Image (cartoon, rainbow, N blue to C red):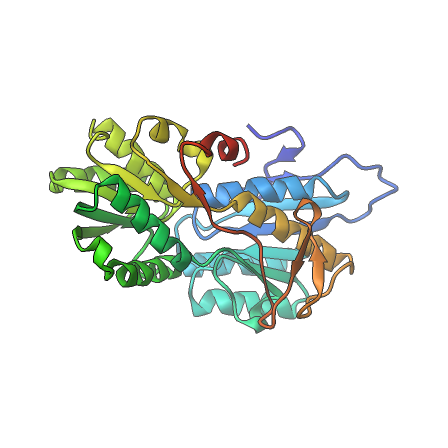
Length: 334
């Protein structure tokens, strides 16, 4: 349940607004966080960080929304609606599509501060891109975790988001390249399925592959919903002693699966920090307390300073490997 200071807006959203004296604030700054799809653990965690940042600054309203499905036209319409409603800033994880790029470009032309997260918008469609870790950098660690857990041999399935989703394409190429190494010659990829970042859909897909491949030894799920769904499916099928799951997960969601031995280790970064940094940067820009210029640092509250590179992007998070020895530490954070 959300704290009382957060209430539902006209979107399927929240608004954070600290109590302020009427004389102090006349018009609050309105920010929107736009996810590409509903029910995704990653964006729910981004929302958590965004809320944290919003309540640190007086006079802020923050809305969270997403299209009903991962549909580019629907996400573009959400952006257009935010422009019509004269929001001050839009933080968006854009669906890869020209219609979303065009909508964000219109928002920039209307004077709105547009910050992209996860997948970069073109420079003329945003003021800044807040870069998460490159998923390709996680591929070596995920294969190494699985290789060690399976004793260097066995059938593996890949459970990802969608076939054309940029993060999946990046990860798939990186895994294919890494898989060519001799150390992984006895690991065989038997199928790739897609859960769309949704826990329930990923759970159903994982159940299906567990039934279709009785010799399956492992599932690599390089996104939060997929990993949560896969781990639960393995546990529910009673296959945890044989089938191992790794991927990209939220530590707080992986406690039970790791304690049960289903998840030996996994890779993550803090989506809470992504949401937090995006809101702090948006507010700094709106208050004329920062500029987006290469080499110029931008203060981001508890995260310190982020530096913009020549492409107009700033990196906000680093990859972390979580194992049983470090699980409790990270599970308490996100």
